[in-house]
Structures are given as C-alpha cells and as structure tokens.
Image 1: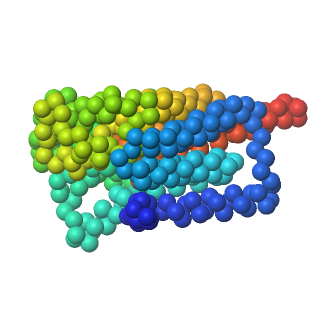
Image 2: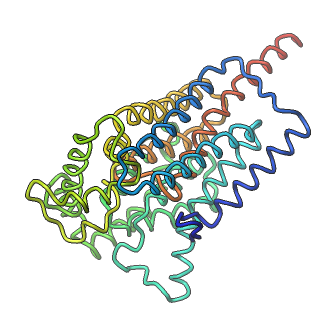
Image 3: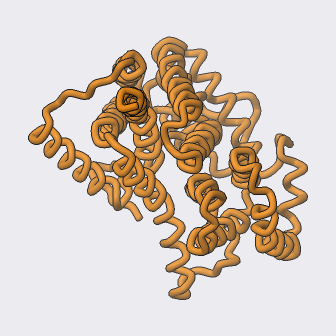
Length: 384
C-alpha cells in the first residue's frame, strides 16, 4: 500500500492525512488565531529545538557523504516528521480530536494487515505461507487495541484482537513474539483488577498457540537460540554492527552521510572476516541508534536520543496525571514502547515516520489537556 514520489515511498494514507491536518490548521487559524496557551511550554520549546537541531545535523553530514543526494532525501523525510508533529500538536485540542488521531493511527497501521487478509480471501496468498505476517505494525495495533478491549470487552474488539493475534503468531518472528509479550504484561498490569475476565480471553489464544506449535515446531526451537550469533538473521546483524562501528570510527562527529551506509560498505567492503549472502541488499544496520551514529555522528545520536527520552517523559507524566482514560493512555504507552523496541531492529522509514511524528505530536498536545483539567478543577471549586 505504497506510492513513490521522487524516489521516496509514502503510505497510501500518508499524504491525505497531511492534507487533512493542514486543512484543519488553516481552519483553526481563521477561526481562533494561532495562540496555543500552555502553563508550561518548556517541554514543547525544548522538543522542537532538539528536532530542528537534529535536522541541521542530518544536513551537516553531507560533508562526508558518498551520495549527497541521499542526505537531501533524509532531510526531506525529517522535515516531514517536523511538519506532522507540529500539525498534530496544533490539531489535538480536545478529547474528541485526540480520539480521532488515536484511531487514525490504529487504522493506518492496521491497513497493511487488512490488505494481506484481503489477498488471502481472494486466493492470491496462503495464510500458512512462511513469514507472510512479519511486520511490527501488527504488534503496534495489538498494543493499541488490547487495553481498550480489557476495559470494554466488546465483541467487535475481540474479533479484531483475534485477527491481529493470529497474524502475530503466524509471523514466526521471535522479535514480534517478544514485543507482544511485553505489551501484554504492561496492559494486564494496568487492568489487574479484571483478572477473571482476562482469564477467559486466553482460551482462543491458547488454542491458536497449540496449532502453531504443531504446524511450526521449529519456531520454539529458535526461541532458545535468540542470542546465538549464527541463528536466524543474527549473523547478518553482527556483520552490520561491525560495519557501523567501522563507519563511526572514520567520522565520529558528523558521520559518513545520512542514508549513505550502503554506499559506504559497498566501497569499504566487508571487514573482520565476515561474509554474509545477500548482505548488500540491506541498506542500513537494522538499528536506528547505530545508523545515526554511523551516518550522522555522535552529536546527532545524542540529540535524537534526547528526543526519544523526552517522548517517554511526557507520556509518563500524562499517565500520572490521568488526563485521559487509562485504556487510551495504556495504548499510547504500548505504541511508543513497541516503536522504541523497533528502533533497535530497524530504522525510521516509511510508516514509522508517520508513527513517530504522530505519537510525538500527541505527547506534546496532551500538555494542553493537563491545563484544561486544572482550569476545570478550579471552576468546580469556585462554583462550590
């Protein structure tokens, strides 16, 4: 479900979403002006300063770039992240608009799964095809909907949950299993008072798990070799790890050029005696932090890490203040936690550009909700 514009892949719903946010922003400007009042605007200012500094450092990496055009491509992508984050922050001004964005984020990521199921129904795909379901998007939507189901126990949500869980189990991916397990534990911790209802929920999942165990017994043997250097894709990842360190050692401050990793190792060759088939089909180290360190340097790595940690800080702060319902807050935390997990096994591209910018925009926008709650409490006390 992609379209390509100037050699950049966009999700089918990505550009319409940005147009919608721009339209909503223009409408707000005409109706209410530009003012967004916050009692504590420091996190917002800090966030956007860090993001702008990071984009500047991405551009600066062009100094050592083998393919300078790729740096401009990277800058364009991060400018999109800046724009979407700003527009979401501007748009989410009340509970209803927050839910609009939350469910857009859900369906945006669910659409890839829906497309696969449509292909299966049409007979173009076999549901038992090896690694047909292998995207982290499936765990993202699982993390968003599972807490809401635990609160409401609606049948429609249970059906969606079964569809998503089936895809995760058929992914045969250890990383997806691990991230889904973590999200399940976090969600159950938030709703520990509903233990009896939750116990019933696990019957269909246990049945599905037994089927997977019988159909693909090799999956569970692979779980015990998770950290083995020769298991699965670990060998490729280890080679890419050493290549990243080699690139970083050559230009530690401003990097080898954003999105220039593949050009670098095609020129440098494979060091340290490693050789992996099809390595040159991998355009990045499959680890965001390694890639930023290698391509954009240590300063960019520090700034980006600060952005990620600021996102965690804001979501944790909102959770403690209970400015939105527990199920939605848990869904946001799950989403960000899984997104953070994917940074260690992939890179921010394609759908994850929108995912990251939207969750950052929501985290900033919820600061306004905190002010609204304080004002409402004051008015209640004054009326009393």
